[in-house]
Length: 89
Length: 109
Image (cartoon, rainbow over all chains, first blue to last red; front, side):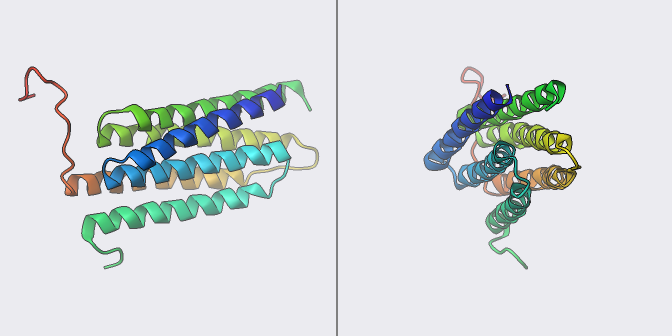
């Protein structure tokens, strides 16, 4: 049962990442692309955690935490740059 | 492994994956930027929350192991997701993103 759920989860998150990639390519505004990148990053975190369950290894949480931190900083910096034309004033 | 714990982990994984997929469908299908912002920022965070909770339950159920550092990922995501969504919305307001006219018959509303 667990392996079926894990496979299904991989497929669903893969579909979600494909939809995010479509929005990233389509746009139309640059903010849509930033939002698509942010969502892609969060889905990648979910995929990493799911792969950690699949591999029965606790190594992947540190990677997930790092990805969360880097993604937040990237989104904040990009939207701050769009908002003010500068990141650190 | 205990079948009850296995069932709980499988249900949490399916819930999380379903919410992630729903958030991304919202991102791809909704009509303008603010509605697109609304979709993934709530659904995806709950999706990742359920997924990380599944992982915490799974690794705590393993022998001789209590795994609680997934809670750090949940806390970090729950704190940062509204902040980045608010910054994105502010940037969109600042850039004067044009909303498509949703009511063609009555343009004033």
